[in-house]
Image 1 (tube, rainbow, N blue to C red):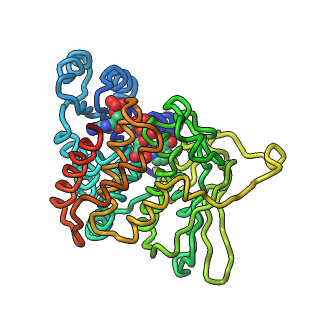
Image 2: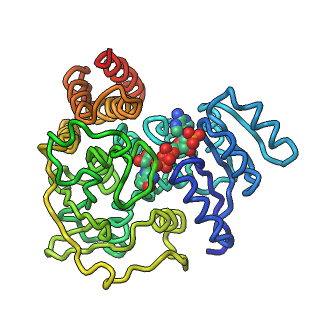
Length: 385
Ligand code: NDP
């Protein structure tokens, strides 16, 4: 690359955001930080801003604006507050690429805004594609925007597709570690705690995605994400449990050949690939050694016990606003589980109830998604009372 890419990181204080900053720091000839945003973690945002000296920062929580502003007053850094500001700042002319690392539905508006402004996207915020995949991908095509996947499974597929432009995909296999409760039955799951759910065997991630990994909803969200990223029919997408998380996903072509992408579980690699595409930059990420992993194993996911995965396949097939309903219900359910308001197995109950209750819309507009998300959260809360 001749010039450095100017990067905006939405959600820089989160797990993906912080790792994206580590990548940028390790590749100073290639990347420079242009914008950082956080929700409420003002102290970390300030620390990051002082270290990376971005052009602008945004704190979504407006109550923290003055604190951030005061502490950054001696630096040449613009400070804004509120979610609307995130959507405006991503359109700054100086930004080349936006890393969307806000968690959940909250990331949709700013992602659409970045695409509208023609910014290239490194997409971590899978919920954006789950909720409004058709809208997002259609807009991206219209604006000539590439969406580079950050999710390790989708990055794997994207890497396997390099050089295969004219060869249609027959099928993809998304691999899943199975999470901390792999092999457990409903009796066991009935009494698991949030502390147990938050202990992922292979990955260290934000709380929401870690619980989603334990319920297999994360894989369900990824199935829908893959549909939109790679233009697939639901029948072309399968999930296989691979507890070691070494093979990150697999593409099968029409001659029966399969390509897989492998590596140690480390999100910095897919983050860097998405930011540097089409280049592979030299890195010091730890290397995989076959002899340390003499066995790579595979099994069927238990969709009966981990019902969220079946619900996600169902939502994908029904389409319309159903994935949006599923996503909002899941966000509310995970949040309720993390605040000890519901038990682990009730997460799927809540998602299923909302999917049955909220009105279906076949061809939703952006406004329909906003209304669906809002309505679902209200209904989900009613289940709690
Ligand atoms: P975290 O919870 O660690 O971080 C979320 C980030 O989003 C934080 O910066 C947070 O700010 C910000 N944020 C949260 N809510 C809002 C809001 N309402 N408005 C504005 N900003 C907000 O999440 P992760 O980094 O784990 O995940 C981010 C996304 O990446 C998710 O969609 C996840 O599915 C996806 N992903 C994550 C992976 C991982 O390894 N972590 C792997 C693959 C995909 P604050 O810190 O101030 O609260």
